Length: 302
Image (cartoon, rainbow, N blue to C red; front, side, top):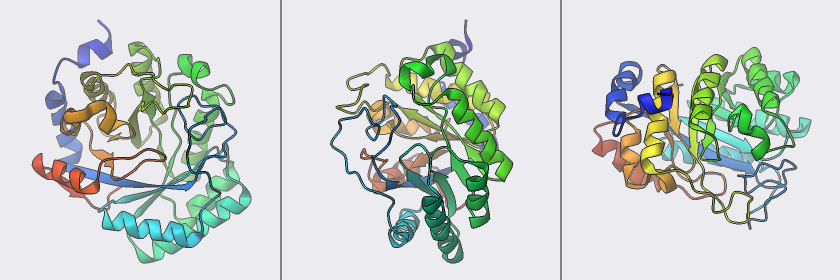
């Protein structure tokens, strides 16, 4: 019997709560995303509404102004998020974009205790250094899918390209955040491989996304996950990475449905509000879910 089948018996989230409780107690970390640059991406990632192969009718715009990014930080605080995630579409940021984000981060750090996470694409060592010096705490660059499945999902860059950026983030002194989008044709063995790959990379934060198939993308209509399978995945990720932040990320509302609260017995982190181009649960509903579980919101801990 493989690890995935062994770990994930029905309702086993309650079993893995002991690992979660040992390292994180009853705290739930909230994160908020700002889609700071939308669309206009040359990559052909099959799942993404912002990719060059997507025909999804989304907003497309260049990097938002510094003032808009600062306003997003204020909104993150109103939503009781401890981490503010600045995300850009595209293969890699330009020098101008790096400087603009860095300037905004410096301002945010002066006026709030928010932790700042950036997700701007592939990084050069020089760009990683600029972000670190500006005060970026964490950098997100997901593996997305298993190495064996990668070419079925994207061919304009490789799995190894993503690993290289994560290593550059670590070398620059930022905390590495890297995760997965489950439900894109990977095998159970591939899911386990991803958990151990992230363990090997020593990712501090592991976002667990569940495919929300967007119309007019290559993966439109592709649905293979059930709420129980999503819980099993979260349990397995906690089992393999017991000390790490496990975040229920994009697609949780669509794929977990009424079982969302059970996911927090394994995971200790969620996004609050909307995602990049899809809607999330209202913040009030997230706050109420956390309260109903007898958990508490963790304000500003990395």
